[in-house]
Structure formats: structure tokens, C-alpha cells
Image: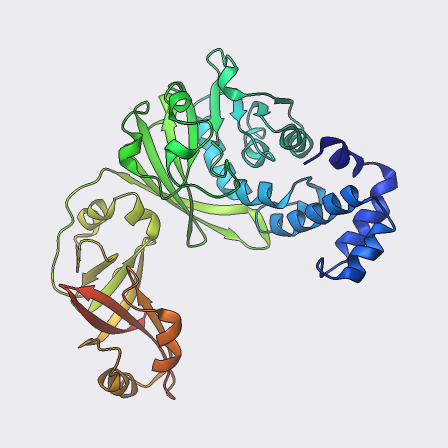
Length: 388
């Protein structure tokens, strides 16, 4: 990305180009590109298209996307405002009044942090640093974060997980890598992939790992260090208003990994929130609610009575049958017996293809049922259920 080109988009002369780009639906159309090229040179048109796409993506994450300057990848990598506010609250509660946002990107986290404290943004990409300054109003610097002296300041860091243009999951492949990340032992937060291997964190400063679920999707893990670390593990769920991404309710559960009790499926199956499972807090949840799992790694607890918990989605178990994908007659008969209409198929570990079998199992009844197809003791079993 060329900084001069991006900065030119803020000039009054670029207003007509941006307005025209914002009105376009198909940027692959030759006629669209021809029309836009009458309003700016090739580089400006390319940047205007990227900005328009980025703002559309940002509508799901930020309150005022139309005011932001960003590129599509920058928006994809940025922390949404509701999640950023959840994280910033912990900095504020610790009495921190200044933080350095390392690898700041377009400034997603800094937008929320600045609501409580002063923030300095740093990124090695001059365009991203400039974008962060525009989006946050905070001072920003283009620099290699590994060469800077933080002088004891609290930090937030989002290591680049696309250093070569492709997403990576291993901490060793992030930039900056473990050699630098291991030195961050003060008060701070390290944003990581929700798929992070916890064993890879053993060489890091002792801290707390938080797994964050936003609208049913695991969006990030956070390694809290220093005074910001409060527990061993935390699972957080953030349910935000799609019309106001910055307004959300967050609930959290804290604890430590522990033994998960097992038992045979009972009258109700209870699907665990993915943040609980990923944070390895299933045993903690079982202890709190006096429940057991049907299998150590299938994400389902069970009970003889309905259970009310924000961490569980309940299903009444209607029938249990062997699963034979080449002969679904018994499954379909059981579904008809329970007045099935639409049928959702859920699975784990790619035991079956839900998109393939959901339409095959659809019946003509009135009930919307869910079939869990799971690999149990080397055999595939179908659990026909009704969501509570």
C-alpha cells in the first residue's frame, strides 16, 4: 500500500471518487472500473475500492464505519469494538492510564482503549500506522516494535498472523515471534488465535488465557500478563446488537482445567458454548452445575432435567439410533414418528457432512429437529433431538 495514495483520498478532490465507489455494487464490472477511472488515477481508484470494501466489512465491527480509513485485510484482522471494549475495561479496572498498542493495525483495540486512557499506536507498516492515527485520534508511529524501549508502559500487542499474506496458527510463525513476545512480562494483553496451542504458551510470562466468543464464533485468545492476569483460564461470550456493534453484553466464567465426568446420554443433551470448551473449562462447568459429559471430546453434556445456563444450549433427546449413511430408513422413520420437518445435522470431527445430509433427512412434518451424528466408541450414532 502506498501512503501518499491513501492520504490523497482525504483531499477534497477525491470526494467525488469516494462517493462514486460507495455507490457501486460490483467492482469486477469493467464498466464500473471505467467510470471510476474518470475520477482518479489507477492507484487512487484501487485504493478507493479497497476503502469502500473495508468500510462495508467494518459495519459488522464498528459504530461509524463510514468515518474509518482502512483496507479490507486491516478490518478482517482488527478487533471488533465490542470485544475491544471488553478488553479495555480490564486495563481501566487495573488503574492503568497509559498503554502502548504494538502492531496496532488500523486501531481496533486502540479505539476502545482511548476511552479510558492515553494510547500510543505503533505499527511497522506506515499506512496502517497512519490509518490507526486517523481512526483513533491517538499519536501513531511507524516502527519495528522489537527495537523500541517501552519503559515499563502497559502494552497491548497483536502479532501479525498473516506475515506472508496467509493466515498462520502457530505462534512460532507470527511476527514478531516468540523471541520478542517472551520479553513482554509487564502489565499487558497479547492477542492470539483462538486456536492457539496452550503448550506453546509455557515459555511465556505466567498469565491468564481468555477465549472470546463473539456471536457464536471464537474470535481471539488473549494472554493477560502482569496485574491484568487474574485467573488461569477464562471463557467469555459477547452477544452484540448487529445494529450497534459497539454495544454488547459480556459474560465470563473463570477456572482451571479439570477432570470431566462422563455418563450415558440422559433425557437432555446440552451443547457447550465453544469458549468454555476451547478454554478447557468443561470440567469446571460440570462441577458448578453437577453435570456430566457423554464423551470427553464431543462438546455435549447430559441431564435428566432441563438446565438453564448461558453456557449451554439444551436439546430434548427423542431417539438414539445407529447411523448408517447408506441406509437411512430407520433414521427417517424415527424422524417421521416425531413429526419432523426441517432437520439440522450437527457433528464433530467431520464424522459426516451436515450440508449433504440435512436435506436428505428433511421430512414433511411441523417440527424443526436436530440430529447429532457423532463417533462414539468407533461407531457412528445418531441422536434425534428437539431444541428447547
